[in-house]
Length: 307
Image 1: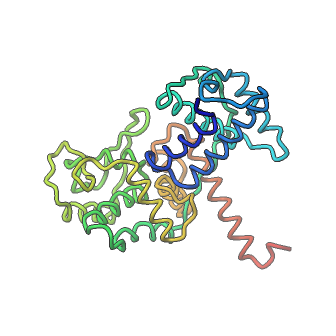
Image 2: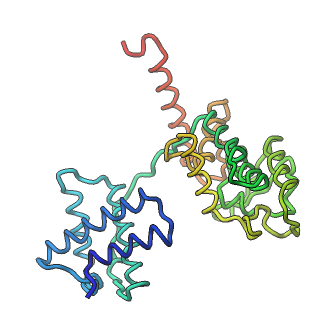
Image 3: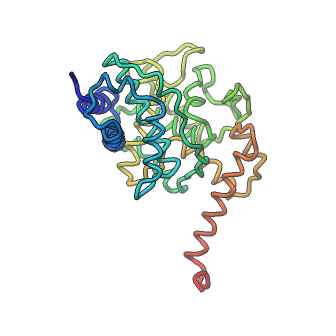
């Protein structure tokens, strides 16, 4: 019978080789899984096999979370939520690959997590991300132009990845403003800067595909629609080359669009409309970020700040 720890090994191998998860993700998931198995074996007083994992009760999972909360170095609510998410992923693997379902996992709810503050990048960092695709010798010119166009839409128009990739051939050349349908089928009008339109046009001029008006505008290397995963992987590679923090994600470009507009004097209501937020309280978080950035700059630059 396969042991529980061997099942963890199979799962981590699946994450690394089939799901192509980052080494950091695999390491974090592995750490959480081994803590989970260690707790269960101590709780039951025996070594567990795969079949035993199918019988883990919701109360045992809650007890495991409680032990993490009460450890010498207690986990924060966000870290507890991430640990539970890792275990749900592990149990899905057990169900699909090792025929060991556990319906009790769905009964466990994680702690309430306060929404994290947006983490924008600086204007220089944003410019670096937009320019870097054209410097990659391993990409064809049209692919570099495509990646630059997508990232420019995220930063220059504040679009979500899904919104940028929902554009069709009929949307280009880009007009002075775009009608974007976002979350909850909420429609908004987004102005298009000349630089954004030029980046999309450069991609169109270089693209090797002839597209019909209803077809997705951005295409993958083999001609299919470009996936969100490609955009995420591209930014991950670019930030590695530029030495940017892990917070420099595609969505951070949207955050930066909002924060840089706010810093330039735009009002919150206007930014709310541009981003398509249903609630002004969501947009308000950008004001907090901008105020924190100003305070940080002040404390570093003002001669009396430390006094």
